[in-house]
Length: 415
Ligand code: LLP
Image 1 (cartoon, rainbow, N blue to C red):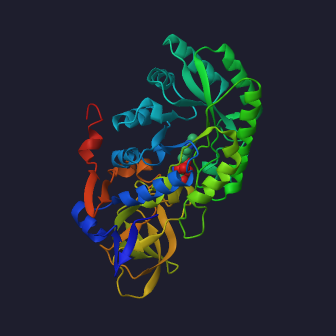
Image 2 (image 1 turned 135 degrees about the vertical axis):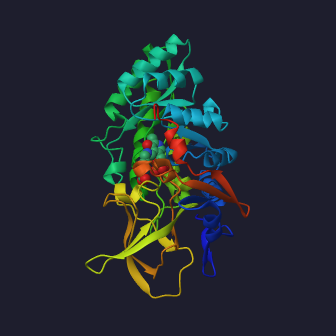
Image 3 (image 1 turned 90 degrees about the horizontal axis):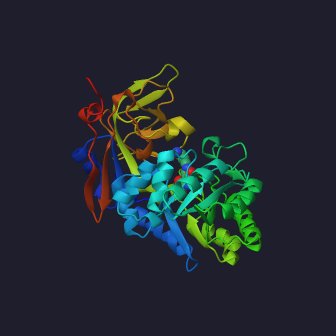
């Protein structure tokens, strides 16, 4: 899916040399391949074929406006996790019916706004939240479309920090409670049950748990139907993983086949909330080597001008990202620990990576950084958020300028 390939010795993004992008826009910089996002979106959309479905891109993966607008142009809806993401989606041109709102701990203001907007569905996380949505909707004289997020207690085999479908996780309500909540809604005039939601976690690379979760919600939908509660969609959440290290992962077609084999017969439309699958492979983070040093035990450190402030995944989850020299030197390979400039030992991108001998000033690309890269960046150590560039049709377009210290300080009062 990625748009990053070598032409001769040079790493390019869809025909544009990454050295040129770094020279023009400086480093660190995120470079996106618009074509990679299009390919991923289409592969998923086509995989579900004629079965009624809607892709709701999970904004949390990357809510840079250029990415969000690109997905809108492809026909995507969105999954928002906060009022900030809802408002951003509206500014990017989405309508309330394009938006599902998922997330633990929705504040009173968020509920109020979501109810007033009339979203496609508020995916409710608890009995108390449903009561609050009901009250807010009645206060505004409307009915809020809701889905209950069920927690099926299924292990999707993901990193514990991104598992959401186990009973020990804070997400959703146990199956046995969900049934009662749907029945109670007949006495809650502010609520219109329209769907059921399940999301097991992120970077899932085996289909069986997702298929089992889908089967669980189908069973519940059938039971509810017999009891007179009819829903119109099943929201299967996100979570489909990508290959960070070249190992085989399920394709969109395989994912769709496994979901459709259990959901197809229900006749309900499918909503899904992929984030990483759509944008993960679409970006590289470019950074320059600012120092090279040798540790005591023969360790070579390559220190970059980007760190956990620009891409926190390796520090936070021990995630693997491929790291390549943009223009490798004709030199013998050395084994480097690739680290950032932040004063934390967890600020490292990769250990013992073999790269042709580096020199200070060399440009490296950290690949598959499109999901949860820019979106999780921070100003720690007063790093400014990096610039972002989108490559489309052979052109490099600056889509977000680099943050300045003045931008940061503009929020501070009395300075
Ligand atoms: N829907 C819900 C309700 C979610 O909580 C998430 C992700 C998604 C959809 C999208 O999941 P995806 O398709 O992207 O796997 N920062 C972590 C990932 C956190 C995922 C949070 N929820 C990482 O960098 O791996």
